[in-house]
Length: 357
Image (cartoon, rainbow, N blue to C red; front, side):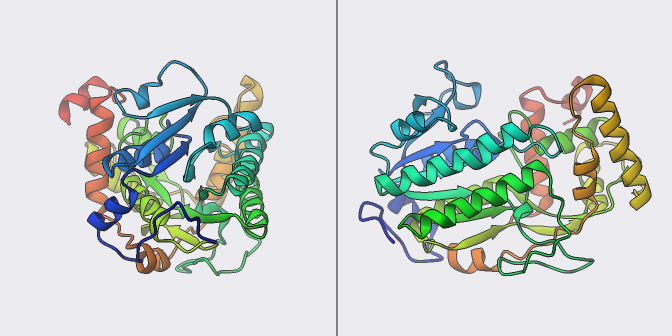
């Protein structure tokens, strides 16, 4: 289904054509203070869209300071807030999410990732708005060494059923249910994103850890690294060019965590890892993280779920997005350099490293 109020363009259109299609369009962004939400908000503004953001506080959050956006105070888990924010909007980019990898925060993951998606999808269908649902490649199948998955690869059963993965998979199911009832929606699955405007930070935590602390051994798995700015460009293109009901991978360079960590160290003059954790080492580190979390009453970032995922092979093929959306991935070195410059400029790194950068 195509909403009459949303201008559409041809797949693979130029950036100028896309900007023309987006100019003046009313777009709601949820999760606008997060990594992908903040980047896509900035790009939508650059393309001339009228952007509205659903935020929890009446005071303007730092990530949205000096941005020409309309703020609606509310909660993505509250139906009245969602419906109020979506009024008179042609498109909703649903980027809100709880991204903690672990076994705790079950209630939070279900509330934001699952229930929030249900409310947004239902509201978009009722109000005849297009929904761009930001999911994750972690809802996709994982394979063995050198096995590259795409949108049609069957679920292998080897995936880690953490609260994050389970809640995001259920969220996609809810979007598909509303598609069957007439919702105009596209599902986008980004890879491991790095880049600027990572305020919390999210995936940038790994980058900062490698840059500022010694870790001789990287996780033993593989990942698909992409620049959040390229993902955001893909999101903008999907608004005007993607076919409703389609699922797109927005991933990047497939590489080992060891290769990624060595590149991070090189970009920041950090400590270069020399090898990878094996299966037994990963298990020990993960279990130790679980035990530490139980002792202090809060689950750490390093736990058995995150270590299990970091030991898997997450290789993905973005060919569909390249073909239909003109998606592209810039070189990793550029992404790391720009991300590090942003972190240093906004005070996330130690003083000596900020000066070195």
